[in-house]
Length: 341
Image 1: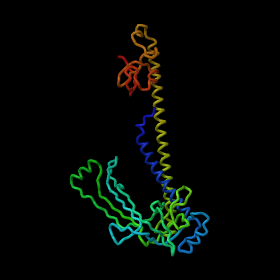
Image 2: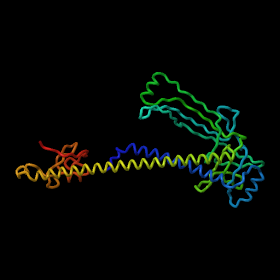
Image 3: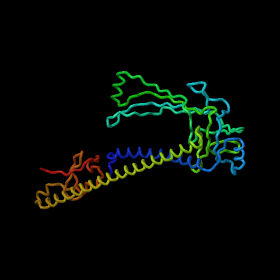
Image 4: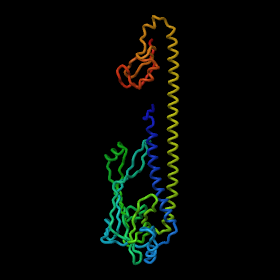
């Protein structure tokens, strides 16, 4: 029977590696789809006539396209919390806490924790000449490029008692960073996705569909970025996968070695008990009658069950009791041979 407590570190490492593999696969999948979509031979739509011709040639209700234009709100806009003159159509607010923690090895390491991540969106479109392509659900885009308009770090003041307490618990709170990102009104953007006949660009669910992209980068810059992300995510995926295989191999090797060691120990104990039986067989009948037999079979009692301390079984029967004492029904942690001196 496998004692899972002996493999706690292996299970923890394998769990962390599985999470890394899942994140790397998602990153690779999104960047690969974006790269494939941007590499397709489609014209770049930058004016009204190009958009109208492209939609007229569409054979279906939706046709995937790459457009470039300027952000134009449809109604009220969002003002920046830090600068009221900055206006946008998408606002993302993030709050991160920076801490320094003591590892199990005794070293202090810097880390961060995301406390809040919220987004605000107002209706807007991309102005392409006389046409306005309305953007639906922009926060669902696989690639969403926002500009950082404010980033403020508030350092936490700590006194002597705070320093002592942080040393005891192993965590020091360094401060909090508030970040504000926005898609600004009038920004030149590249939008990639399926466009309907009524000039609406929105995401389409499905693994075979091309991704929804909205960024201030140009199409050529997006291609370079997506290819770089694809290479990096593939490298991370390969490293994490190989690491997972090594962890599984090491754990299996440990299981096999423990199984073999236990089997060898059982075999040595069986031989010792067999030798004791042969020695007891040569004793006189009087000495044999003084010893009580196993409560299950006629063999002599050869083992002691711990922690209850009952001596009631032979070696062969002790291997089939499923760690439950047949006398008091308590859990048996150890089975040892006993000697009478």
